[in-house]
Length: 273
Image (cartoon, rainbow, N blue to C red; front, side):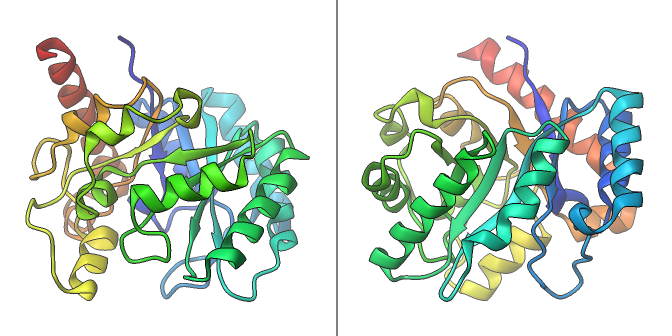
C-alpha cells in the first residue's frame, strides 16, 4: 500500500513556512504540517503568514516549484478565556495554501466550556471548508482517547475528527482495540513517532520527551504497529522533535532520517500483518 507522509513543524521547529516546505520536498515528503497559530512559547518564532505577505509569496513559490502540499495547520488550542475568532486568519491561510485540516487540542478542564468552544471552532472552520482534528495530549485538559471521543460524540460536528499521536496514545495507556470501534470518517491523519517505552511518572519529564527527545520510528518502545493497524489508512504526519539529533545532523538530515525510518517501519509491518 502507498504510504503518505507529512513533515510536522515540531520536528523542525524553527523553520519558516518556506523553509519547512523546501526541506519536506527535498526529503521526499508528500505534505507539510505548519504551525500557523502562534502560541508564544519560549524559543518559538512567529511565522504567521497572514501578517507576512513576502513570506507567503516565498512559500507559495516553493509549493509551486516542488509540488509539496499543505496537510494541516496548527494549533487551535481550546483554553480558558479564548476567542475562537482569532483563529480565522490562520484558517484563511490554510485555504490559500490548499490545506484541508486544522489541528486542535483542549487545555482546560471545564467540560461545558470546552465543548462550547470546540463546537464554535468547528463551525468557524466549516465556513472555510476545513475540518478540525482533535488531538488529545496527556499533559492537557483532554488527555485520553475516552475524553476525545466524549467531545466528538457530544458536539456532533461532521467536520470534526480525531487525530491520534502515537506518543500520546501510549502515554495515556490507551487500548488500540478501542480505535477499531470508532467511525472511520473520524480519521484523516495521525502523528507518527516513537519514544522510550517506560512512561514517565513526572509531568515535566513527559513534557521534555514529547517536545525534545522522541525517537525514530522503530527505535523506541511504543507499539507503533499495533496503534496504526487499528486505524484506517491515512497520511502520517511525522512529529518527531529531537534536539540531540538536530544538533548532530541539522534539520534537513534529521527530517530525512525521520522519513526513512518511518517508511521502512511501515513497509515492514504491512508485510508481516
